[in-house]
Amino acid sequence: QVQLVESGGGLVQPGGSLRLSCTTSGFFFDISNMGWSRQAPGKECELVAGIASDGGSTNYADSVKGRFTISRDNAKKTVYLEMIRLKPEDTAVYFCARSMRFPECSRGQGTQVTVSS
Image (cartoon, rainbow, N blue to C red; front, top):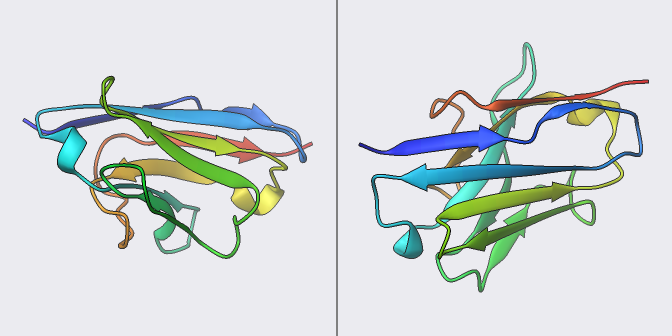
């Protein structure tokens, strides 16, 4: 059974930082491309970042380039999203998924990120 468990979200002030984690099980993580997507209230699911199975290639939405960094630890079967200089418009529920190219917000419970003063 595929499991994706996101954690690390929270309330942070504008300009602050957070590190999200997604621990996985039930599939061959080390040969799977992975990604982070987000969904804000009333908005469509948006792909934020993706990473290839070997970590050699990454991609980012224009809105987060230079602020977000995706990484992975294949030994721990975990993918991370480091977020700095957070903005109120980054407020959303963040999901990890087995895709680095397509948005996916239906797996797991997600983790809430709220950027507000």
